[in-house]
Amino acid sequence: MSGDKKTMFWLAGLVVFILILNSLSGVLLPFVAGMAIAYFLDPIADKLERWGASRTLATTVIVVGFFAVVVGILVLLFPLLQAQIVALTALIPDLIEKIRGYAAPLLERLQSDLTPDALERLKGAAGSYAGTAIKWVSGVVGDIWKSGVAFFNLLSLMIITPVVAFYLLRDYDSIVKWVDSYLPRAALATIHEQVRAIDAAIAGFVRGQASVCLVLATWYGASLTVVGLDAGLLVGLGAGAISFIPYVGASIGLVVGVSIALAQFSEWSQIGVVALVFIIGQTAESYILTPRLVGGRIGLHPVWIIFALLAGGTLLGFTGVLLAVPTAAIIGVLLRFGLQRYRNSPLYSGNT
Image (cartoon, rainbow, N blue to C red; front, side, top):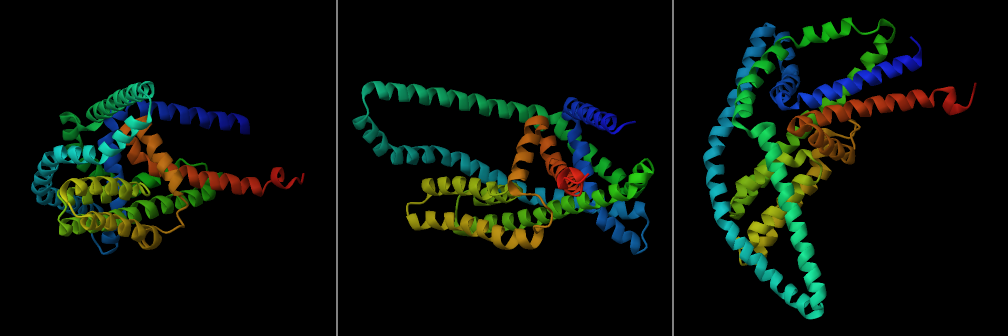
């Protein structure tokens, strides 16, 4: 098979694979989550094996312990978060009134400066954009309901994910050997080198970023609770959880936290303290946590990560979000490999 035919063959296979993923996106979530958990816990299983435990015993202990910790955390946090959600809901009317109070002088100035025709056009545009925003939010809620929060899918996530994680973790080394046996022998060393680079990029980002999110969630939640912000624990944990998207966690947390503070506090110093919590968190993330826990060696630029997460969410919903970072890492490694081969080729140097 010629080089052009090989390229067309692999491109066609990639297109078919993407189409299959898209058609099965509604049922893939528990399997992708199980794969991610197995990948995340595999180094621990390998360490227990080196200490003399069988693979099955190591897998059982790790999976049971992992999900016991997750369930225990949820059981402990759910009553607190439930109460804070209720308190936050009760605070919304006060927040709306405060926003109206701050916006009233601006609206009065606009009314005095703009002509009646301009005001009518402004009202029409505002109504149009509001309608568009409501439709967009409704669509997002509908997609979330259809893609994972519906009762059946949530139930399947709770039941199937531990089973998938157990079997994949138990058979992880066997699966790797099976895949390795089908790789072309001539390119085996090159493929192994790129797979190791991909594994380092994914592991470095996922495990490092999980540590960053945990530290930030603890900082935001504890600090906002000490400050006395209503629903501070809920806002802090949410901001920390989405901090795997660069700059987004702190930005959303800052907007939500300051908005609640405006409705709750009368002193600007207290509102400033809430903002300071997120400024400190973002500064620590950028200059201390991410360099130490994630590092720059993984080769995933923040803009590339944001694009991958948005693209994955658009194409495959929450399943796409889970697949986004591994896919971005694979593309990044293969792109760097292709560029290196290009720079070492006569096409780049001009030598024939």
